[in-house]
Image (cartoon, rainbow, N blue to C red; front, side, top):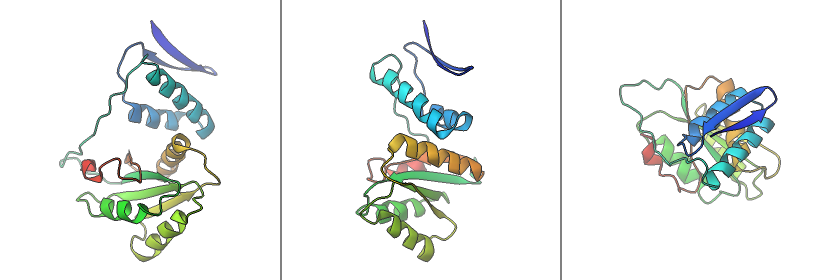
Amino acid sequence: LPISLFLDDNAISVQKNCFINFVHWSFLIARLYSCEISSKIIYIIKRLIGKGIIFAPFNYFKISKTIPLTKPIVIIPTYNEKENISDIINKVFTLSVPFHVLIVDDGSPDGTGQIVKDLMANSYQNKLHILEREGKQGLGTAYIAGFHWCLERGYDYIFEMDADFSHNPDRLV
């Protein structure tokens, strides 16, 4: 039986025991709904994945060298990442693809946001961006807010990555 998630007059359906590309779904949902509603839908999908009703295998996507990436960006959510933030940003900017980076910072009290602002001013003008949010609002809403920010600015390819190097930046290319 299909599983349907109903929201107002819109429905998002997935087949029971199917495989979904969670990153693709997150991006699609962020395009269709507001940040608050997107967060709720993604929470429900994550619960279905957690209960084994649907499956989301972890996949890396390699960028084909033949596809021109006119505006690629990497979203990196942060909260108290001052130990890693410079290293992860510098690593992304050393890659062969000219990525932009959006840091979504949830008001890190350790000064993560200021480190990013210093890098923006001194090293990566017009390539490094920051979206500052009040208080710790969570990883899922950080990605959704980042998706909205990127879509509003016309980015063609949006990637997501953690600031703690749990995702290898070299896998972006």
